[in-house]
Image 1 (tube, rainbow, N blue to C red):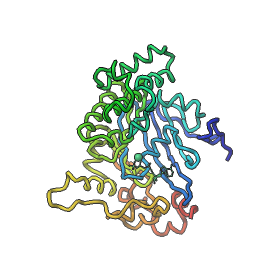
Image 2: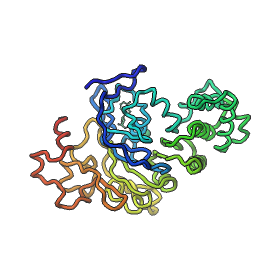
Image 3: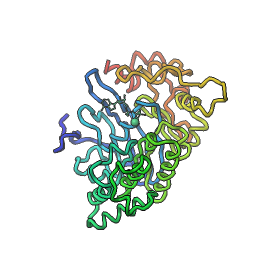
Image 4: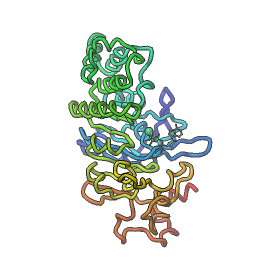
Length: 371
Ligand SMILES: Nc1ncnc2c1ncn2[C@@H]1O[C@H](COP(=O)(O)OP(=O)(O)OP(=O)(O)O)[C@@H](O)[C@H]1O
Ligand SMILES: [Mg+2]
């Protein structure tokens, strides 16, 4: 396949990609069959390996899962911030605000990024430039996307610092990042991310680097800013308590795939997938004193040697016949709920050992083809 390489050489996109129909207008973000792999010395890491989810305008979605399951790579792919190589967007579509953005040239993507979708990272020091004042950085972000004068951009910076609860914003706006505390820097990052009124905010572990009391304040701030601006929020975290307090819907990821989606309340109170059940029962606060912590047995699979069939099967207490050979696709279990587990398929729709020989499912074919 021929590829077009942008002038900056970081994001080849396939020429003449054939994509499906756009999603309905109320869907802001539609991620379909996304696969992002990394080709490294030891082989290929299938970091994101078939991710599907939707986010409606103004909706909040939590993306949760253990370390290394592909949450950050998913969000970086949506922002088109994956370095290619070693990364490769192997398959999928990403529809954002009516356009399929994997097909866009990087120059268009740069306009979308920061203006229509913006990201709040875990560690603000790596995203803020130490040699410019915070006011300069916010004003530059505004000027990059809006036709405004220097004065207007500066005023917007002061207004945004005030909006994110920074006291004496006229004084703080002239300070450098190192002059601010960690919590203040994270507020500055949020001010910068929201300075152009994005339609989508992606927050990747936005409070992990902060101490506990500040974490709650920052989460509250993100939530209130999201409600005020009507932006959609994709909140990435491994903390289920944060999800319970902050988002409407959630998607659970395991080993590069989404294994369960639904409203946060439904998923947390009545998890369908054994992995989600394991995550929930391993929360320390759920365990009575003196009782053993119920951690999920086994470890996250080696990314170079993913198990065949369902990737959770070697750790799954409920694994049965089809799980070893066949990877279950996401299936609607109840209205608004999906789970990728053979337990939730009627027996007539589960593959059997006879299907192994014929490689009946596309995923099985693919796995065999790679071996
Ligand atoms: N640039 C890269 N090169 C090679 N492998 C990578 C690269 N970036 C990520 N990976 C691999 O992709 C997989 C998914 O990583 P990712 O950072 O998305 O996990 P995560 O779910 O965000 O984890 P965490 O909760 O620790 O942030 C991991 O196995 C990781 O080692
Ligand atoms: Mg991450």
